Length: 248
Image (cartoon, rainbow, N blue to C red; front, side):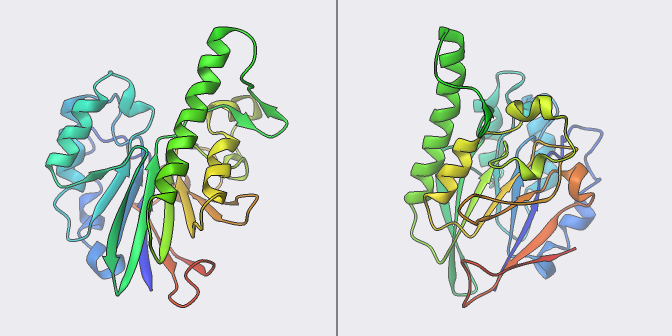
């Protein structure tokens, strides 16, 4: 069995330091790894990244993250990434990592992702250069996730993004902003690989549970949605591709 703790949209700054730490210190008894689905900071500054590293770094379990749109706000995402990596946190962007857990290999492929919408209500790569640039960005992030997913050999494979790969986990958000919360191309990338689970954040007023067209379980782990320091998802050995339980 592999136990994955996950949360997103923690928006850490100096005022948040200490809020999550007591629950995080209990992780070794509850989970084998912690995944954070973006929006680690409020405004993407180096100072806030140091606050996140203080709060979420130095744990007794591996910590793997992707950045979110807030983490790009100050155009310091490269410096933010460096701060996090220096603290022992793995940052994924179109890349993957493999963790050895309980005799199993857990692969985690990550990308921030981007918006664009879903089938029947999505942007298309047509028309003005600005629109083609927008959709081109969406396609680049999805292609990077697909490549990362296919780059690893593991017993269980998790896709970690900030933007949503399916619309089901956006239910509760205004329909008018779905196109800015996720895109179908991420779901296609996830379905192209033998993924066991997909985790994302970003949709604060969304719903926790969804599924890709190919049947991969999707969980929105944004903190305002799960309303606790993290959820724990168990991938059961022997049925590791399909069997998933949640510990509240």
